[in-house]
Image (cartoon, rainbow, N blue to C red; front, top):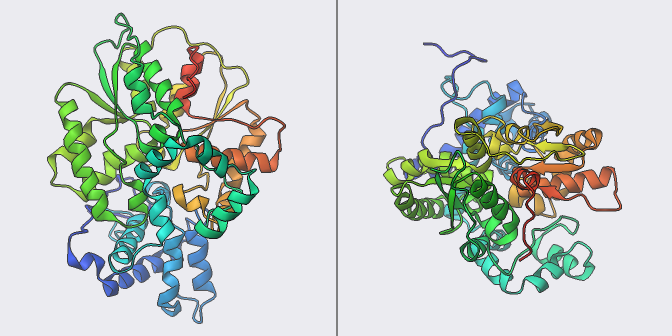
Length: 451
């Protein structure tokens, strides 16, 4: 059957053939880059998604012939540098994704370029240090007071040093560290599980994720509270980071090794009847979709993918199958709910919005557009202002909605969105960025402990 542009067929994601020597062949990659960029040049549907496409179109328009053929090889990498692997071009915009004969997968081509680069050249030193989230979390957690003081935006001396030495923008809001990880807190504070709740037969492993474990344990505490109140037995498990920071840098061998190790441990819990619940969308995306494409023949990886749910997806599943327990109260002032790119890329629907609309008499307005942050990309001195610009339409919409609560499934996107709002509408009291599970827990009357 011929597949036409704009067809209704579901897109197909091909296995990432990273162990094939041709995968990192420089000549083959450049040929494919030019083929794909030429298709993008003729379409331009993605011009407003991120900075990759404006860069690409400017390169072509300013070239000698106005075509891809006259763009220098050295300039092709600047387009790759701006890609945050959000997947939105593949998922929402591109009419030429497989099974279309053009077979276009822009983000995975950007990944291929980075894998080849990582093979032949070491990534920048500080980029590699930022990606070591487990080491950083353990180290800075031991001196969390000092680390958080040094990373404060108001601390001019230390932030100038971070900008000069590490290339981190002076104005970007950085994550905080905690002396006690979520996994440790959960082990010391097992919740009382409501044995008479409709979902009392369920058991779930909370994959803490590096961000929740080290930077925002309150998200994990809220998730554990909500699930326990609804009868779900939970256990926080965190073998190590899923490897999303390494994937962003093309370190695919590292990601594959992590996937094999983590999935081997997680299937032991699956065998005991536990569901797997990831607390941030980037990590859920890795477990559900990216790992199976990297290790398609690993049975543990495939089983883990089938068993994994995003936290908002899991709560909605409970609400549909068994029903949530009573006790939810309205949140006065309403909620602006930003749908994170890596949540949308999971193809599960707007589950965070659906979950928050379970709250009685609470207005929930959704924003379905990129915040601009892009993980570690958005904290860099060379990218932060561009990241704010990409996220400006989201911030403007949030200001217009004028809700009391600002939320995103992605904690980094939420911080970035709040910064964008503050630039448009400075407030005497800082707007707190919320994860949707925290808002559901708040509606149930829960307040996370300080740790």
